[in-house]
Image 1 (cartoon, rainbow, N blue to C red):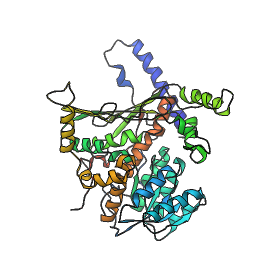
Image 2 (image 1 turned 30 degrees about the horizontal axis):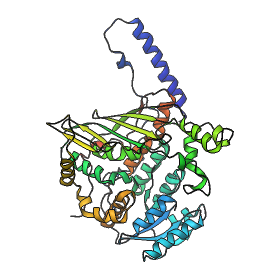
Image 3 (image 1 turned 90 degrees about the horizontal axis):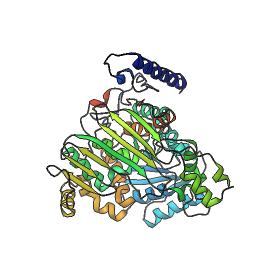
Length: 470
């Protein structure tokens, strides 16, 4: 980031020169040949002795001994979900709120599972990572701790799974990549939306060529969180230290792109035959947080007078190396129905989950399949993993069952020594959009290059694979 002011000034100077050049020239050379996306961060060389971790396999684990750090809403759900997986044993849990630790212990007792050791001090996660009887560190803390805990855990020989986002900055993205490559430990960002039933079915359809060549995809996180963001202590939705509100107060961009981006990135085989090359990001002004704060707390309240940076609607456009386009939107401050969009558009067909679930296929490209035909094709292309564990997932629950499928797959792959469905490059690529979008927004939609976190290995594989035991 030290070179960022210089790089931006240079880019602006190029724009000015280009405009003057075009005004003075009568040649037919197109103006856009003068410009390119700005490489703000570059791609550092791989440190000596490191190799990429595409398709990384680690030693099989008879029982995966898990430590869950962070026991808020997501952490409690994870403890419950993991308790249904025989090959997983929770040996340690931690949260700075002691009541949360006791709640998680009670859940495990009710499930007939052994009671884990509990930790309540702010730095106890370091003690947990240093334990010899932990195989997997499962992180559900506030965002700022995700990368520090993940890096520390891998450095101490642990596999790590962290709630989204995996990282908040490009520096943290590279920390994750380099540490995973150095230690040969798995690092997975817990993107549960990849495991939703429709998303898995359309992934299966895409991989079997039903949509032809996918040329455009859209995803989003449109979720009215105003009541949650401003939930004070004692209110049902209150969360520790109101940390998420602080991120919306201080930053403007795609602060939470992963839910929309993850499933379509796998459908597009990102870093398995294609890669995200550059992005452009713009935001509306901020209206919703201030208006809501005034209504809830009063015109003269501290909340109403704060300078919230996060524009209500952020739209980020991404171009891939293979010429595909991606649109990602983020809005958590307006009264809109929940949507992740999840749209795939190809040369032979189209699928979208929100606002209307539908599929369109050649030769009837102008019309959705009928309800009965949609039901039939979703059954026909039901993903093999959903066939295997979908019914149990619906019984256990967790966002309709996708949380359980995610946890099941994580433990399944560690148990059998298989590559994980999501790797550290997924975590880095999807998380990098956070800071890169902020830079683009600050500079009126300036095109910004996305680093190649695989350092040239993105084309060694040709498709995303969710591995299963032979």
